[in-house]
Amino acid sequence: MNECVNYFKSLPGFKRFMSELRKKYEKYGKFSGLVKISNITDIEKRDLEKFFGENYKLGSNVRISIKMFNKKMANTKFSSCSLYDLVREYYGIDEILTKNEKKHLMEDAYVDYLNDTLNKIKDSDFRDYLAYVVQGGSNTSRIIRKRYKSDKMYFRDMLFKMDLLFCNIPKVATSIPMFASITGNPHFLDFNTSSGALFIRFLSEMKEKRVNSLEDKLKLLESINVYNDTLSNQTLTYNLLGNGALEEFNKLGPVSLNLDNIGCLDKIYGIGNKIFVFENPSMLNYFKGKNVSIIITSGMPNLSFYKLMEKIDEGTSVYYNGDYDPEGLVIANKIKLMFPKVELFCYSEKDYNRTVPSEEIYKSRMHKLDGVNSFSLNHVKWAIMEKGLAGYQENNVKSIEKFIDKKMI
Image (cartoon, rainbow, N blue to C red; front, top):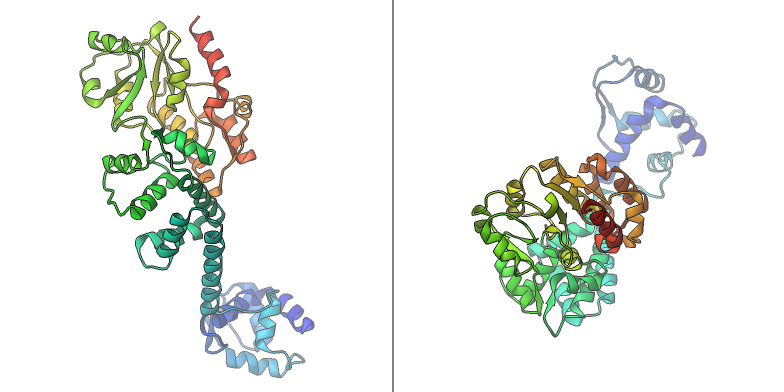
């Protein structure tokens, strides 16, 4: 058999022929019918003519019966070689699986994956719910299968983190980021993330509540003592200067401006003609004692944020810093693209390393970096791609504070 396999491997013109033989078996579970090779090349013409003793026209579409191939094989020293073993050893595989066999194997692997995952889920209600869902034909069961096919390791990790949340439902009022921090990532439950969307879906079905709007999501989370930090179409601000009404608001401390509020404003200024924009509300808590102007995007910027940015006076410089993960860089890149005058700061490789990155970034998230093309983000982008770990701006707050102090001198 080895001599037979080596013979056909020595004929490069048989490469497509052997591929079609394999496809035949995978589709039908047997070798029969015709092998079709379109637009044959010069090498294929040479090797096929040598073996079959036929004349083929260069560039033509050739149809060769498998019966004819077997007949030619019978008249060679390879007559004892079975076609199945020839194709199998040609490709160096233990067996040629038909499409149905592959389908059954994939299904068995999926069932084993689910059983192994469910056996490790600790919260009994969550485990029972998942077991019920995967047995049905609902959209949620299809979503679970799709997530498994996309990245089964990342999906399993996501389920285990959700299990951790269900095992630790708070007994007192808790903010979404604080609750999500149980997973090691305060943004795990952000509504614009796949993990946040799936958690809401799971929770709504477990509680048998319909969720059609942002308000529905907030009410659903409130049912487990989890509350949102900001409201829809509002942007959290601090010490912004502008209309008299805005400065009156500032006396109260941090102010959430909605679209109606922003529409009533003229030009907006910053103290010292500078405004610092951050991704996370926790940064405002840290800096609100400073005499600086701050805007918080609270994750992915909403419409109110963009309207607010449009109101900023041209003489006011704007600086932005966010998280050191794919989603954070996407936000920074988008802000820079929409508002070129914004300066992205503390995005060096050193800043990234100061966050002590520890959370693994799975490939289904890493591809988001492909769209990050701002020059200011290149160093941190490549550092993230190299380490495959996420860092958060809260862990780099000292360097951010030094930058602010220097700008405010």
